[in-house]
Length: 381
Image 1 (cartoon, one colour):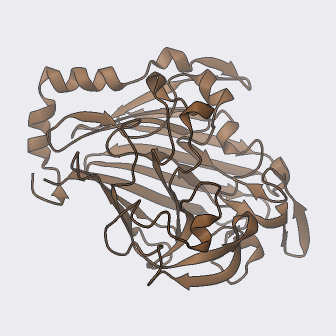
Image 2: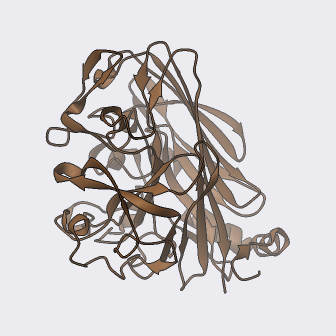
């Protein structure tokens, strides 16, 4: 396996061809029976995906969530690198964001309202005076219809009715999770509407490349392909200003430890109760083009994750509100503590419906909403 290169398929397969690797992966998978429950008139379940090159993942149709993602390190030792729970009841009562498909609108909309084509729409307030991640119900809390496509792919669909959480239009949404043989988890989103609406979907997975519950991410190296970020005011609402990252703690254009400047005296880092990142980065890319957005490297395990997306922004959240003692106890009873994970959410900018200078999130009848995010894995020595 070459440094900073893709994992060799042949080397990878020689590792995973041994019973030990398969047994280790099976030990990391959660029990599908613990996800089977009748909710909202639909049966919830857990779907295990595998590809030919050794990646494994589990997803549930409750919230179209990513539950586990198992990736080997430089020595071929697998670990589950995403936060989550090992039964459906925990997702119903604890932090619902882990691994969720978020919509209709990821991130915040100020004053829980927007105007479109002269009509003002009032949304659910669930974050002070604002709406966050689509409202109280959101796509995180609904049961999606599931279609198993093959061993490495599953599709989820949801029909969001006109007026749900205040958003206009009947919306048909499809999310496809696939493990490709290019050592990647690929998530594809599609949607149509019968009335003009706004839409901003993302996946809300929390990553720790050392393995979930295996220490914090402060020493992991983060690179973000962004020369600017959207400045925010109280409530994390954008001011409309795009600030250059140069000379600030927001500059991740070169690989930098997540914790290198996390406690600097900088306004955005001091907005959370515990210092940390919760910022939308303006990616240096062409609109709609699937291209490089970010890279995370764990020096200890050698795992590398590269994120490619068609979206214009990337919300980076450093897990500063996690507290195992406060209820964030995950799979196998592991507490998720402060800075124990890193959330990278490809999406449009927050409050875009109220910011005409931002890239548009409007979807109209006859148009096709389509976006893709790909998380590619390799190792370094």
